[in-house]
Image (cartoon, rainbow, N blue to C red; front, side):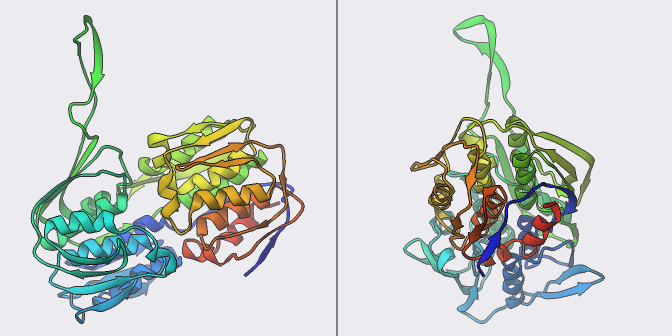
Amino acid sequence: MRRRILPAKKIGGRLQVPGDKSIAHRAAMLSLLSAGPITVRNFPDGADCRTSLRAVEKFGVRVECKDGDLVLEPPARLSIEPETIIDCGNSGTTARLLAGIVAGTDLTVILSGDESLSARPMKRIVDPLTAMGADMVDSEGHLPLKIRGSRLLPFEYHMPVASAQVKSALLLAGLASGCSVTVRESVITRNHTEIMLREIGRGVSVREIRPVLEEDPRDPRRRRTSMPEDFKREIAVSAEACVDGGHVDIPGDVSTAAFLFAAAAISGGTVTVENVGLNPTRTAFLTYLKTTGCRVETEERTVVSGEARGTVTVTGGELGARKISGETTVGLIDEIPIVAVMAARARGTTVVRDAAELRFKESDRLAAVAENLAAMGVKCGLLGDGLVIEGSDELSGADLKSFGDHRITMAFSIAALFGVGPSTIDDDSPVSISCPGFYNLVDSIVQ
């Protein structure tokens, strides 16, 4: 539905956001491999997470609501009619994690998706899973994907591209098949799968590779740091690994909170989000806020179900431009659209590099950001792997496009709050993918 958005006079408030969808997907997927029920608190109601629930139900998982929690009761044995088509909708996480699990079973299924998901790359999971012994037939590197599961071979894999979904698919494949899998990361990615496996299962280990001091061969009087391995983290699932079942308490989604924090950053107001996830692999946006001139305060820190969380307050300041590349881009990958909106109101020129991955999301997010910023009168250059954004004192009200992408829709709904005059979003429905109540959250901080 088309939505008209008026400029905000003032931003501020205290609120909570729905549960982290990355964690929710993994809880749903692990129910397929669990020996006992998994009880989930704060499971989000977004379309992507509902897709994962519908998918596991196809294999016999019983999904029930009890006292506000979601209970996932696994079947005694996974079963499904051969070549059943599982519709993964718009959810890449559902497709990739489920592919890993099915690859390690004796089942045959076909994974499909909507037009957007069918354009996203699947070869990155097909190649390593095939190397493990799975029989997989893709459609020129995309969905639909036919998987004939089998007994897989022990596997070691050094990730060529940073991807928590690929990592998780391989770990879950090993878990499903009862074979050892070791994944090594040169760039550290989200670790929700490893955490959950340790919390409600057994047989997973994580080894962090730390830099060491050594003598400089060019000058024995000096010492230098070096990495003893060519990777930074090693995650291993043993052949005896299993999921016992138990309780998973999901913190608020920090990626959803980022849009509200950005509104505070641009306006100079203050927004507080309670019980928000603070997993170190997900807090790059909070660090970015600090570097641009915002004040970020964290209170009530705790760890529940292995996941750090707390209450975060962001107060905006005079925003400064920054160069974003390498591991910083990886850490901010979901937040780049809202980072671009902040950059449009920052002093100086922001350069984003190493973000080519964004061309293969629900939309080509780089092109979508550039087009919408141009509509608002912002000078924005589109690079092969990034953006160059020249900050401006004001944004023009404009007719903005969602591109069918929830993060583009959310980012430019926030941008519209700071336009000179009203703006429109051509379709606000994509927010239902991750946060159906997004506009209610925005209304709660607009004063």
